[in-house]
Length: 216
Image (cartoon, rainbow, N blue to C red; front, side):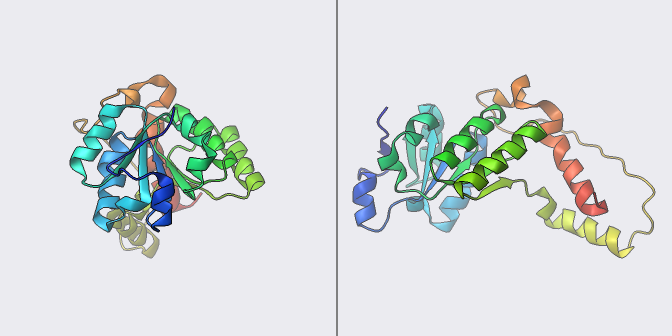
């Protein structure tokens, strides 16, 4: 499959000559793209520097309708990673694909010479996480995981209150989480068993916050 950019009729090569070539790929045009990454790119005015990739044209049409000037490619990520001429324009990639694809996608991106920011979870087991760290080290690339709830101001305030003794001695922790499901998921991938279930999607955030507040 030959990649074709939308929202811009120039090829990557002609864009490069003008100094406006995009340099970050975002693999996945679903909810993470529409709710988080595309709004941030648009707010920063960085549409020329990012390209959103998804195999589903409908997902990309939704992004293009919502964010003027966004650059998109209708393609599978494996097809793009095999196109070295196209990849020469990019230095990094955000992996925002369904969880069960993370291992393969992250490995392929690192082997293609790209730095990677992978949405959590990096993988569904410890051995795979360590394997991917080794792949990144072998290829001399950066590998990071996007899991930032511990940086939310309210979460930081709780951490400070606990560590400073503002709320007294901690005797125990109870966690309750539940409300109407409002995260957009047209594909239904969020609910499929191969993507990990409740602990991977939300439970892990609370485990991470507890470790940040209270220590390992």
